[in-house]
Image (cartoon, rainbow, N blue to C red; front, side, top):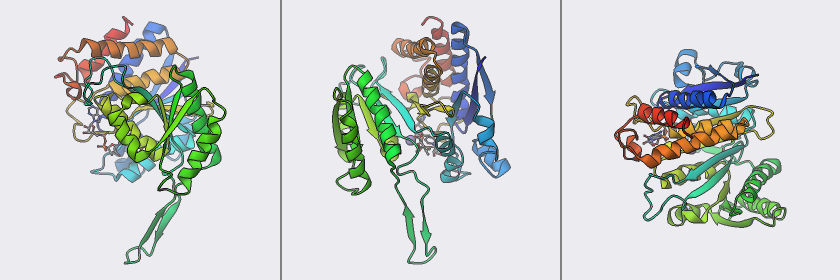
Length: 358
Ligand code: NAD
Ligand code: IPM
Ligand code: MN
């Protein structure tokens, strides 16, 4: 039986990097004799919204729930559709309804890429951000009072449930335990946010008791961002709430040279629902249409998807192909964000060819 993958390219550079992601997956499937069946959907994009008045059809959950995985590009076109409408109407629905409570985001300084941090070489930055992905600061609980008057009040709650906090911490501890350094850093802000964050700290301490081999530390989010820049080598697995994880997972990849290479896996670990794989970056309206977006975030997300689907060797081949092309560093192939004069397609094609040698 082929594994079924739903493909949603989204907006802007999402539509430019997706074909490269698929090109690499197609080559990898041929090399490893994988049976992957891709089905493309137009919904989940701002164009769909402009013609249908909504981001998703009413039966989207029924349409997608039987797939083995979702492969997503990027969504958002704020000039025509406000972000809170496009994102809450698509990506954030998928994460919530498919209970993709882990957002796993690797940050790795790759060979051939120059970190903006002085003196950092591959090996110095190699960690995971594990982001809580269904609750926390991204809650829909809140509202407005006295709208339009001087007395306007706007409230949006942060929600932490014991189940929600414990399950992301457990995942992060397990990941830390499986890695050679066995180190876990918790992102907190319990000095200023006086109810939810002390609770987060308490749950970290309780969970840590189950993992005596894992070396645990914690930083308040403000100094943690500084330490990402000053001491990225300190980190191995960094776990944070939804918002803190979001911030750290743009900052981390920026320290590795470009957010254009960063992948992510929105995972429902029990497999009750499909997991979703997408680059960390957005639709990048500032470069959309120029054909110069870096496709590696999309391609590497494809590798994370294959790993999730049980094809470890195929996933490893894609990551090795990315590394080989970056190490070779041919400026005619690389995209401008990593110092090249090439484009989305030259880089996508080079990685595709390389897959056959990896
Ligand atoms: P962005 O990630 O789209 O772009 C930030 C900066 O990084 C831009 O200068 C852009 O050119 C650059 N960049 C991003 N990806 C790149 C790539 N692959 N190659 C080279 N450069 C790249 O963030 P933004 O500007 O804050 O958001 C633009 C839109 O995307 C908004 O609508 C936002 O809500 C949405 N967004 C969507 C997702 C998602 O779908 N997961 C993620 C982030 C932002
Ligand atoms: C991400 C994005 C999304 C988030 C936005 C677009 C809603 O920034 O995937 O990191 O905040 O989760
Ligand atoms: Mn983000």
